[in-house]
Image (tube, rainbow, N blue to C red; front, side, top):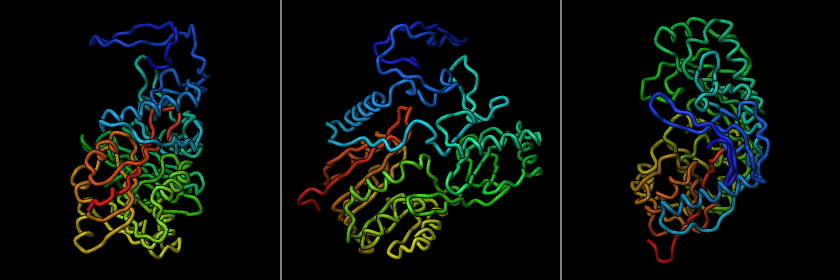
Length: 404
């Protein structure tokens, strides 16, 4: 039941809907768990976004780590190797990107049954920059009578540079025409885009039309300022970037070797890896990301990195057929695993070490089963979204002796 912890005694109300579905609503905690804390969020009762804000950080971390390791073992069919959990950020103001919908007079999220919509302008997990950006954007829409034209919204805000990127899905074609005909006020660093997505199109950025500003925003990673052009990725939890950079360097040990990075994005991890390596080749399937990565490397003075457009398995086959070999490989997995098409050909690059970043454990576990000739030595995790049940999984493989 939302809002509870194991072994607590609570008072709850059982509710049902018209379809006969039932759920429990917490009314009071009679016997609290010793690790219960105040969630410090006015909307916590109905918000599905941070279901563990009522658990002490140490307890929540232990629970999440156990759940993630059990998920790996269930999917992979063997024990998880040793590893650490990194917690580089706290539960307040860590999230620089948000996605929501227009729910009545609020740009927010759907709530648990029976509760009002979650107003993301009040979300304590969002950075002050992302909350301010959404607040100003909703005010501008309301001032021009355009709030009802918006169906969904996404916001990316970079605290240190002041850049903001907002994309909206219009309700319908007339609503999109209204948005295009009534440009929003110009705000420094803010870019706004709109589109009419199809039923299967969840991406609000690809193919969107500019209402104000440019599609390129800047953000900070360590000592680097990077640019990212829509729809290229920008950090969700920027406070974790330094930890991820340090982990990638320790995992790959790139000093003096050739590195291949699949899913390089705009070069967020590419730059520190290239500085240590003999050379780096980055691959990504998003064209603007490759253009940005090339420019980011140039601005940073990194001359031994080059970036290619393509899908991972195709790129690896082309590189191998061209005689290229790499001693270290970094994989950026998404929610879906890369799959056998990549894992079957990946050993041909001759890598001594392979590191894998995945937003969910299941992707890494499934690809681990498909990768032959390597041993998974470590399974680390980083808590990018404290207060939620999610962890980023990070695996390190080493090549087995006599593997070809």
